[in-house]
Image (spheres, helix red, strand yellow):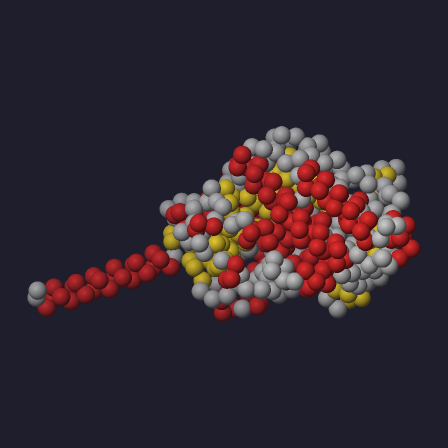
Length: 500
């Protein structure tokens, strides 16, 4: 081989090697965004424990390309049957966080894609927090999406409590400085593009060697309002997700272009899910979400269940609770039951603010949402719909409407669980003060000894008997997972405070 030939070969090998590395680092889709893995630890509060021993890896990717906004072809209507059409295009670059099984044999085939919540002015993952035990226990993969501008840039607007957190570019300018979000009117298509990447994981490689069978959309609170708009306006066009878990939405929905909350762009303040849903939708509502308060409650958007809609309303629950603030971050499934029970103990202070009452500490919120995810997955995979539940009972003649309470001060109707049918506390989704977050955290007022003895004259033994009967009824009805039964009973035994 001549010297010029050798030089040419070395140069060609260098170019080929560089090209191979670039293909590994950035996977360009012919009809989709570019995907670039980002080494190092993502800026996201997931869990207060290491996921590695549980067989899970955490990875971050930057997603970039061109994104589209939408506008309505006619005025928004309260029935949610909206006709959206493409509007503008813009370049974008955002990030996703992937949590996946490291052993492909443990992957159950379902990927849960969460629309990150940005109400605190930063990306947060409340539905990962609420469901991570079941996600890891049953081999799900999880993808969190920085869909909204506030999580990246810290801009004012849709982040209603934006002073509480720090946006990505402010947390780590070196890592996230290149991100570019064109505005929340483009967030819906960003979410669609990520869903396609996950659905086509064999090509995009965002799940490593895993290949997805089902892709579910989830979002809580503000994200649930955006998902409601996505379901009503964008899903009929995009057709990406196999089903939606809409968690703790209020009555309204985000506007499609200004991306403001309820009432934006002259739309009604209460928006139902469109009647002709393309895929299954399961909505879970707490007392805080249903009642009218700072925002119109879900009660104004109520609609009957049908073949593609289930709505579960949970008496005795609040929008955010002990699991949101304390228990979720330590709940690995392996900590001693006494430590987990201590995390559920009533607390009257959050983020340095003293509240008038202890915040809601109702475990049914966590356990029912875990079950809702499983039931949605089954619904999408097999067609078997989740059980139906009656709404919580309300005094509609009151101004504003109030819940109908039983003799123990707990809301009647809704999804029945042992924490309201065999109670040891008065649990509510409302009625607190002392913090900007007070309207979201509800309250828990433990019964005194006299009340416990009146309810359970046989003491702890009688309490646990009634609690177990109610729990088994909830499991049989399909609202709590049988896999959680043992832990729930252990928590009940530790939590009882009667004199005998």
